[in-house]
Length: 171
Image (cartoon, rainbow, N blue to C red):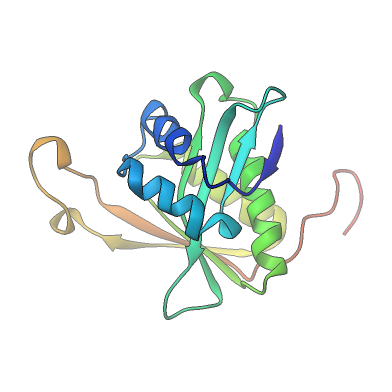
């Protein structure tokens, strides 16, 4: 996999992958705008043929310039189980730490065990603290129809440091 910022023409592919991965899907326009305005705080994972297989989107949190907010992590269903989400998280963690961000935040629904494990292992391997707290309850979202949404807990990881030492080598 080749990891790097998304390009200006990647918006439709991010939108399709979000849909295929079962995420809350934003408009195609939002993904296209994201690739223009937030490419430096996002990651696209491409296979050897150049096809998009995963992405991470995020931004500097307004009012908290030391905090990187991770918006979405998507992995092509055919590429799950290959640690791609973790590799993308490590990649963006290195990039944002190098830019001076000291903390990473994201929201996770209470039942999303895979995302909870991802952020927990990321914090552990970087020697960072992790905290979980309720952020948005059921009352923050529509209660019926296709827009019904589970509550979201805030995960906060930090302080961020550079990349973890390679496996088998002391830090």
